[in-house]
Length: 250
Ligand SMILES: [Zn+2]
Image (cartoon, rainbow, N blue to C red; front, side, top):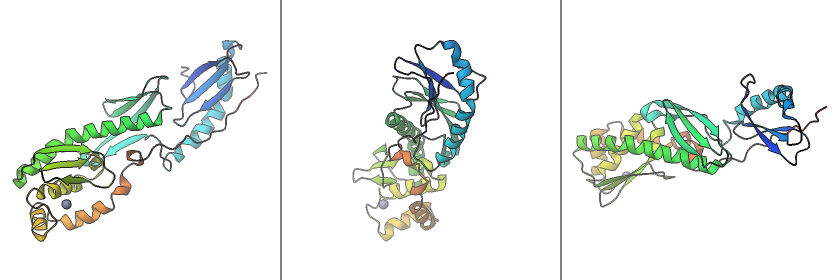
């Protein structure tokens, strides 16, 4: 790494390349492809010559991240009012793995493997949901005098939660993207099913006791799907085609 440059870069030696060139992948990772036959004392001057071009490309890069389904730059979980910054560390040949580092989430591994990154993100979210929703559900159940037999955390596409006739409650890990009020509303709804396995008037009366604003919350829930990140259910977009700029060393 060359710290004086305003971006990080890696170098790959190539037998086939005739000229040095720079590529930028979808995670804004800069790679210098260096012909093996060329003396490496030219690497530094070459990078500095490339700098304006790389800066320009990287600047174009960022605004697009909002429209495209790309690995996130940060993750906010309104349910627990926490935000994590994402850090990506490229390690070729290594399956991406995720770890927490204070208020940052670090994904280290082969950053070309978008699907593995997505699986890592989903795994982290599910683990987080388990940690937070299990005790939360137990608390609300205690308030309601309701008893369930088991909890499972899933990542469903269309339901926030469900309750089986065997008193098993299943919760969607994406609940963490909702406000605490809406999460509580979903927990109350599912727990009320322990007494009424239907949506009868008696069921709604039970819900209303613990969530007087349930009608408002129910309505709000219907509009919440769009606030969950696309990576929950969709594979990442293919990297934008960035123009490579091969050039000659004079
Ligand atoms: Zn229901």
